Amino acid sequence: FGWRLADDVLALTKPDEEITITVPENATVADVSRELKEKGLIEYEWLFRFYCLYSHAERKIQPGTYELNHLYDYHALVNGMTPSAGVRATTEVTIPEGYECEDIFALLEEAGVASAADLEQAAANYEFDYAFLQDLPYGDKNRLEGYLFPDTYQFYLNDKPENVLGRFLRNFESKITDDMYAALDELNAKLEEKMRANGFEESEIESAKLSFHDVVIVASLVEKETAKTSESASIASVIYNRLCSKLYPCLQIDATIQYALDERKEVLSNADKAIISPYNTYTNAGLPAGPIANPGINSIRAALYPADTDYYFYALGEDGVHKFSKTYYEHQDFLASLAGETADEEIGGDAQQDTGAEGNDADAQPDAAGTEDGGNGNGT
Image (cartoon, rainbow, N blue to C red; front, side, top):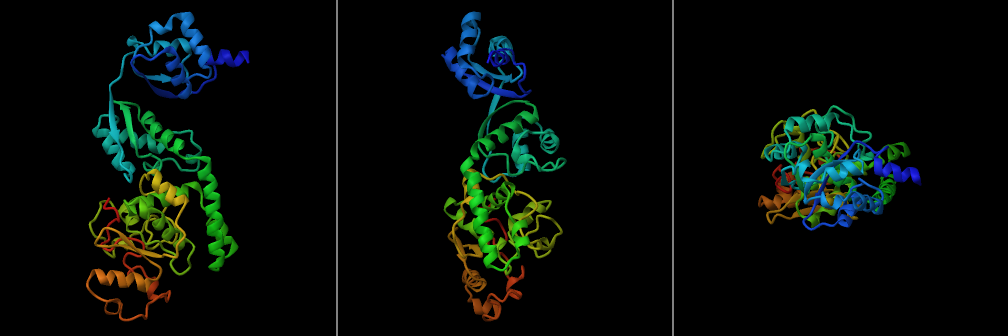
């Protein structure tokens, strides 16, 4: 026990990690001790209070925002919260749900937090110590796509890019609970049962088992497809129903094509939908290669707790609400109604209804799991 006390006072075995702490006006030593404990900078609040009393540190600590480090011993922590340490300028930045890494980096650069180039470099190559990033390969500037949690942050101006990205990752980690990991196990069990009922081999079922990274991918798709929280769980259900289907193995989500293109388009062409990319869900079965945006907590929860439906299609109505359909013919009938036609006029009767032939072709169902106009369901 004595060794642990000494380690806390002298920071003998603590990691090299910078932490931002704010000392409010009229904060007491007890308040500061509690904040240091919550941020992991000290282990024993009572011991730090005793040190402050012994060293008269309460006279030194002043209100302000400071950058401290786990490597700091008690003496350095106190000195780091004094006027001589300097109060760094900060700025508030709000990251909207559904922003891609590229968008976030540009926003942070505009706010003076860090350059987009430095953020891309750190995202691609910095070794962040989080289990959810463990299997993601280095070298890709979009390696952290899906994990930069949308929120409102106070950032230092001209900060180190790894510190900035670390703020997002710590926030993401704090939002993911043990119950969510348990929900993933339950979700996998339900999907396995559905795949087995649909005639998949056991080897196929085993290889299709979802990881938490897969859940983040699905959440990013949901985030891009709808801005309505009331629709999120149903959108997720369509995605999972297709993943468990032999009739409709491709998700055909336009937002994945937009992510793969060099620039966004108002309407996707058939050539766009045929591009060679691991993100092309028109030509590749299953999930895209990775997340296509940074989802909020509602989309993450929708991906973990999808609605129980038999829907395989959806399209955006004129009222801004998605219409969900169980069959291809029902889906085409809705699209035709938007154009003032009938399904028979558009597809020549019911010859294609759920045949698994033309009815399963991406061009025959232009937005099988997307919107009528080739854009994203939430306009992002």
